[in-house]
Image (cartoon, rainbow, N blue to C red; front, side, top):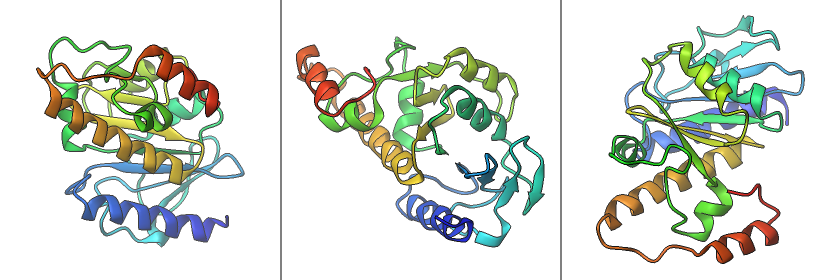
Amino acid sequence: MTETRMREQICLFARSLFERGLTHGSSGNISVRLDDGGLLTTPTDSSMGFLDPARLTRLDRSGRVLSGDKPTKELPLHQALYETRAKSGAIVHLHSTHSVAVSMLPGIDPDAVLPPLTAYSVMRVGRIALVPYYRPGDPAVADAIRGLAGRYASVLLANHGPVVAGKTLEAAIYATEELEETARLHLMLRGLNPRLLTQAQVDDLVRHFDLDPP
């Protein structure tokens, strides 16, 4: 895919997320890793619903801005996830309501935030780590991501929101949407003792779809 087309795709997906209420105001950001190792990112303080393809930030592989507006202040966490998950081609970070709500619940397992509620939560999201709260843009959050050593494609920042990596932009978007839906189901079912997927069922999905073990 050409860079021009990728710019258009970022703006198209971002607007879809915005129009469906998965991000709001100037929250959220997207990045894509290009063939030369550089990145395209959404600019800081920009609305995902009104992005201009020509104003997306273009960075070289060392992180130097080549063109466009100032990059998202969350760039360090994107870079940390790319560093630790070499096959990732895109990253989506949102402040989606249900995911943020789950990140604030007591008693969350930081190594497995959400239980295996559905097949698609296992297939598209996998196991989710919880990272402690850091101020938005704090470089320390990147160190926390690196500390996960690439074991998770999906990370929930406490009191902040999800960060999801995918092999492609489309995959990262779909996984982020699936995470939000799983978070919504989890909140709806709290206290109701829902029937979860068994370990045997999870193992079957992992084998059949050649997934990274959750």
